[in-house]
Length: 627
Image (cartoon, rainbow, N blue to C red; front, side):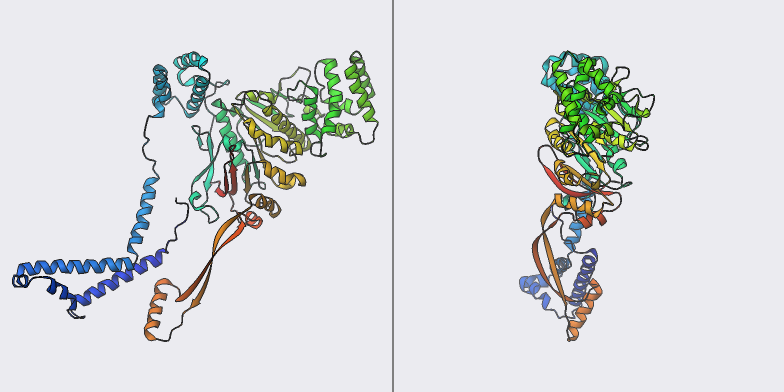
């Protein structure tokens, strides 16, 4: 579509005017032909032809026929232009061409299925093997994306060429496989394009608020956009999980199978996000029989780093600055690690934070030979005597995790199989199920812990070639001041987060604006509250638009002929004869107002604005998520 919408005459007026103009032309021709208007219209024929032609009947008949065709054709062209017949032809011919253009033209150049890059590099045998697999239907889009990534790695590291060639020769389309051996997901619910890394989430609605050139075009998300992080806000049952979180998670899982990404999806137990077989690691927190535990300290080796992420999880939503809490935790878990070679488990940490004399005495005795650790314990003892000691709050919050249901979920004694988010350096597919129904507060703590550990691990990665993404299906009470700052830094680390909220009221008031400013992609679903819509309207800003003020004044005439013409005009157009005064102005208005976001977004739709890591951005667009 063109950038601007053409100002088309309504079809009723267009066809009515064309019919009336052609009938008028036919009436004039009939009057001329039958001589009712005299024979003056034949004077050019008589004047411009020799007298000898009139004496020759056959020659005069031929000249007369040519003259009649010229006059009739001229009248036809004149009245056709008066009736806008060429506009009718252009309009419907344009629609036919648009329908024909919907079919993509044949591709020019080398066929990607023949692997021209490999052939140009002299790997003809490998290219033939893969091309044969494409024709046989045994090489899918995941295989293509995975082998393409492996080839790009070979071009960056030529020493891998021999291994790549041997793998393709021996395994064909299964070469360079994902560590799980899987080459596709058990099922797909969305449309994916792994060549570009995109997943389709809907269609730009044919709505007046959308730019004309964007209407009816597909809308998709890709790592370049998710790398700026995405915030989606909408009430329950608005479609956040089904129409956004599930397609995005599915697309990232396919990217992981292609060795391009690592994804960690956090959802409530029983949520229909994706089947267990679509993930490499499934951690049902608080459910017995789980194959994996969650590492409470995120695989950290340094006590201060471990204390920082744990303090963020425990009290990040209650205190404006968690540094005091991190210091208190480090003063306890540091000596415990020095004494036992591991960080304390949840029951042990609860006893230490609660000031249990026996536990503290045993810890002091265990580190009696280490002056540095003794100084930490002495500092903790002095702070414990203060009335505002943060350890009291930490002990209250850690108690939510010290429940029988979580006895096997956060073990640090080596008996379980702890999973650390440090593993996002590998193309993993991870799903963490939270027990929101029975342990809502514990679920919020674990969600904050995962967000803090993910941002820490993503920023600390040595190899950032993989795109890492954390998807929080419900980010209620997980956003803190530190997490907002960390989300802003993820852009440079080739990582991002997807946060879904029912309302911005689930975020502390002083963080709602910074959160909307920290993410590059913002999505407002239908049913949004007006106060939430006001936040989105503020961050999306205003734009200059052209407005037309039309003043109509009915024309009243007393002359019979004019009255007849006005009556004919009203019969054709359906409107009385009026005189219009048009005033065109440039005004500044909000792209989407709070009222429009709250009441003007249809069900199954959302308003989406995107930005990529390079700084390019697009204005908010109304998206039909059902398309």
